[in-house]
Image (cartoon, rainbow over all chains, first blue to last red; front, side, top):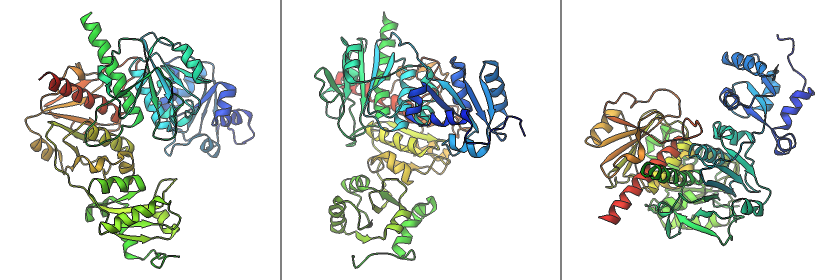
Length: 264
Length: 264
């Protein structure tokens, strides 16, 4: 048994990690909790070294390499009793490794395309959207109040490392975002909109609002400067999954920009 | 209390419904179990009337209208004890209504675009893919052995009614699908492929393979006639969610066909 095995739930470092399971703790410490080898590797390869790294004695072999890497980068690696580890992880097939890292603060890009998330409650959808937005080279993703916490474990898992690759802005209110993104063309996908998303000129500085899973009103519902756009659909299908719809539109923007660059 | 309240787990109609929670029972009876008002309404509006409809006394008010509709269409509506209902539903916020319907057998469309699902294990991904495929007007979705059961409750939920709008083929093996889809151009998204998905001529009869969530080899891995295609991505993102990648490609095909129709 390791000399530094933590077995007491009163251990301050364990308690600190526990506090990051909740939005309040994450906000207070500007830190987040990463679960699993893949996410922890992603954060390190993006330059975000864990401050704390917890593992159990039954953690898989490659956890040892990860532990050495964390220590090399100045982090603390601590062996945790399995019953304490169980309270820090929420996946069924936990890999028995968890890390504490600072919330990434990345600078926005300059491609001209921003995403504004409004009313999204499903963590899987938000994570998938971040992954697509990072892949599409979106400058920044802005989350309005009411959106599921972008730093929650489930969003991190679905994001597959996107959180370390794209600038994320937790907006305090809509007015802040309006000031920040003034002078751009704003769009939101709506089922009955007349304007086809592929007819939009995505070379212009743009904001794509991703909103709603048919659950309650949107903060941006009555903004006068938002252009409704639609994705033409067949078979009486009313809507796409929110992350899917956003991805289809974002990659159309990417396609137009790529075509324009090839011609220009 | 209703006269026909079912309280015994030995009730044959309740037991029949229970058997549909498993793939074996669904295959044997060629039926499936629908949970929630929305899915049951979707099946009826697509012309698939439930044979059985179960509700509890605490089901929401709109369940009564649904019950009347089921009876009008020749189905049996039965009041179930809450503890039995709990064994038929797996969502946290159950609406206390469940229906048994025949597996839809829809005819393939004639747009020229087919999807072949290979190695997809996540029910949410398969349901989301079906929803996108139906919306994109795909002719038929073929599922290879090894794919999560397309008629399982979680896939039905994520499909949001797509199961009643698009032809679905549970293929016995790859050879059957190869015969069925011979003479078409076959494509599969791969991270490093040189061919850009938007440079493909999607007006030709095509098959898009949707495969893998980075878990194990694909049945279609060594097919010589498959063209690898890629979605260009930034920020060192390695891949998109499988359903998202498929949707981006399918709606590019739709866009090309729409443009061609507008010009032709």
